[in-house]
Image (tube, rainbow, N blue to C red; front, top):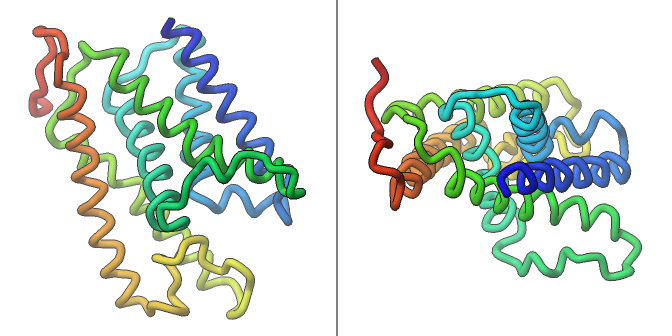
Length: 210
């Protein structure tokens, strides 16, 4: 069951990434997005696990959090809570792009969360892990802002996400958004640990790292 689930998870991510790249205006555009980066991390992580290699619960938690962030930001921030079923191919001419968006924003985050809740339940996590997991989103924000600063004003999608749009919000506005999102992401990280503990084997404990 576990192996089959993870094979399917990797396949969904790969298909979504291929669809995304196939419909991109330029081949260097997709890697700019957190969505693509988080799904690439998923492919690498679960591909490694499928090869029979072990990893820490901390690394799995990080990958899971980034996928959950991808799904929640896409649903509540980028689409305003629109019905994701509308992304199903409908013959509009954007079917490949829509399929990729559905897979990367909804299917892989939900499947990764399910894997987190169902498998590897006996592995230990530290209470500081959710704070460590914030390092990558912070690095991504620095990357996105630095890239935007190097592009000419008016460049299409100069900033990949509206909450990082310096042209519209200014650096002070972006800083406020970043702090709010960091708090939300930390809460999500602790929620992942809490959900994992519900019904977990008695041997599992969450302890501070030694």
